[in-house]
Amino acid sequence: MARWYVYVIECRDGSLYTGIATDVERRYAIHVAGKGARYTRSHPPSRLLARFEHADRAAASKAEYAIKQLTPARKRALCASASAKADSSHKIDSGSSPEFTS
Image (spheres, rainbow, N blue to C red):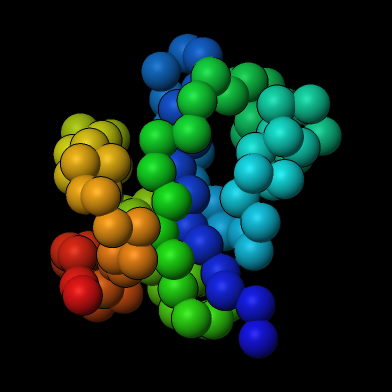
């Protein structure tokens, strides 16, 4: 079964876009090409801030929803703490407050 990821993109205007995919690099390239989500067509991406691995689509969707409920400042803090971790296997708890779990 394919691993699913939640990813956060910073757009050129400073806004943030959160999505899910099985291949984040391919999906990011689609966003950059202007053929991704409607939001990133009008707010072109500037960089990929973070990705969070999940076992399946359901877990990734729950985590995506939880991240989308955060303020932009909390999303940035979450991404900063994820990029500070050397281990890429951290996950977002899909509960009410997204935190890292081992």
